[in-house]
Length: 337
Image (cartoon, rainbow, N blue to C red; front, side, top):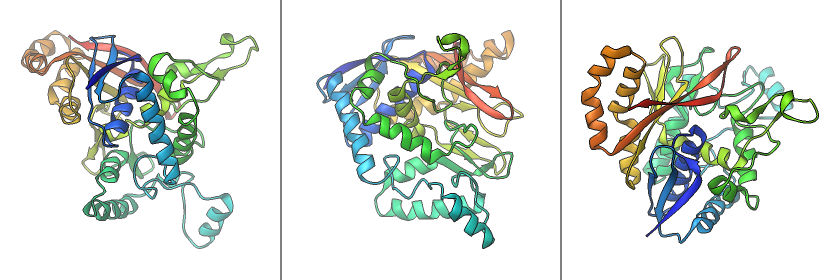
């Protein structure tokens, strides 16, 4: 086993954290024995694998992207998991038949999502655990959005006419380009490219450029890896409001808007990382940070538990408000210790 440093994926950067989790998901989900850790708060991700160096890691990730496309899929799961938008003519014909279809077919009523889960359960019984893992995080019938549809992963916050399948396809294509994933791992290069509404830094107003026009400047490789982190954030709910591992929901919100993550010392297996992401002490110390001095005193026991688990810090980043929609994540805060 060799420990490879992923210099661009920093523990105190929300996009860096998500991209590291996405890379870890793709590698371990494709049969590679790997462990993940961090070189302290603000330090880079450390990946312990059989791969010799960062070039081999980038190459393996690119191989996974090629494999996904060759299977006719958008993520490393069943091609049927993510519905793609029908043409305008097809939607008009279905509407004439009394079948109302959303612009994004992934936005669906709970009863339709229930049927999706039945299909996924059948696939899981046939041995396809990867699709079941993706489904558990991608959508839930136990929470409703403001329109009464089942809630999708909090990693996806559409803007305008954005559709999940188109977003995933776009960044999957970019991930297959030479050099894109190496840039994601060792040194980000922002390109004139619309983002996935994940990173506040993607948005550039007119003052940034010489043309006097607004533009976007995303890191396509890191964005794709961040989207591939979806399975780490499983969803649950009470039938009305959804909750997700690693995300906080404001009391009045219908779905989570704040990413919350631990930074740990030592190299951890996928199973150990699952435990750290979902550990109640992570959420407890973050809540205490927003609750004043008394709440901080009450969190002493939780702090002791986190230190025993090797957690050195807890960070959070919230989505900006954008009218009635969720905007991108912005400004990491270290909320513990």
